[in-house]
Length: 157
Image (cartoon, rainbow, N blue to C red; front, side, top):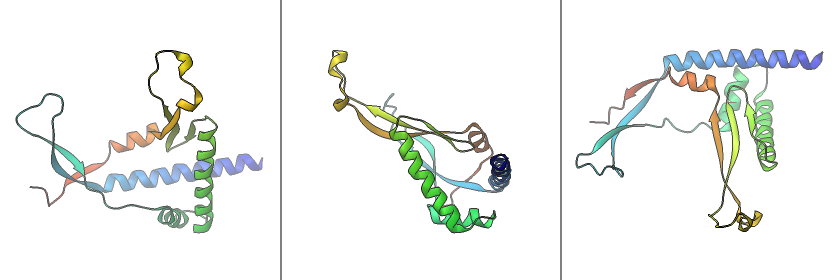
């Protein structure tokens, strides 16, 4: 019974927090600049112009913990300790071969690679290496991206 109450409260907090983020996204705009990028495929003579986001900065774990603590009954220390623990567990489960799904955020998985071999027997465990941690955003998170508005940075001509 206790677990159910905690899960129910947790889901309510997540849904409520998601609504708050949704409201913020609708009000905010991301700045972008227009840059030229080389055409490596068609080798066109005229350059092509593309939108590139202007980063507002980096939000670290301490700021996230403070913001989440302000929006909940948790303390900054509680949130910080939980997030550090989640980070550690994600690493642990990835090392065990699991993909890690965090509802409302997405799925973390490990990417591995090796060089190509002529025979399958040649591809041994010592030839395989972990390359990167992949992230696939949750459907709801991706849907919210459609709501983002963009504003051209004033430094762009």
